[in-house]
Length: 277
Image 1: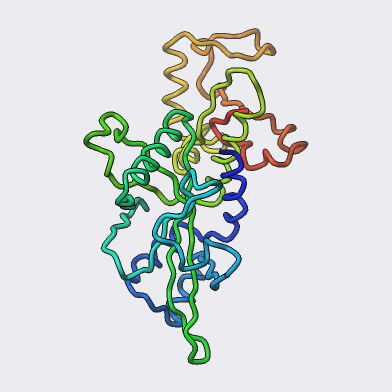
Image 2 (image 1 turned 180 degrees about the vertical axis):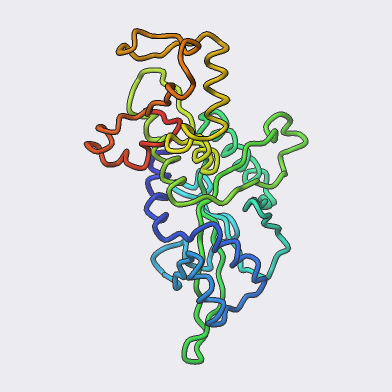
């Protein structure tokens, strides 16, 4: 499994932003003109030309492409304009399964891995278009990482075996984080609980640089006072919050700001409200 995602990770830098992939999806045309192409690029798309050495950027895919040893799903793709698949405003879509039982079971197996490890199962969604250069038709590809959305498809396989795979587009950063979480399971023999990061909007809502001055932060302080909680620090001798004016109560960093300066890979986490180490 680790080898599968090691191979997949190498392709993530070629992926576009979720928003630009959604725009490409909604063109509903097999052919891009220069205005369409420029619009996609400005929205964060990477237009990748046909590449004979990378299966992701070839049209030989029969919808679903498998990874190492043909075990797990790597890519899902199609030529835009051929299908009526729906991509909603939250960038979720469904991908129909193969017609054989093995392919159907593979979809459920990928869901099982995602649910039981509590780590998003990552695939790459790809579509391709014709783009004419000097009166010659060329193929260009737009790809984006996506994660399997949890569902109840595993509760009764008699009814759900042929269900489509439910996916949600994600950013490259989210894809890297999911793969790193998976790797972390292989780094220790201890039973360590892992968890995925919060959605970006929720992380920003509770981030350190906002929570101290928002109404939500005030509500949390009042809750802590009502529950009789005390300060976890030793400098104030664990004083009870209800003995303090709420203006004198502050939220702390989960990750030390000194650590983030020393270990620069944590710089984007210093204000994050929740993180697993």
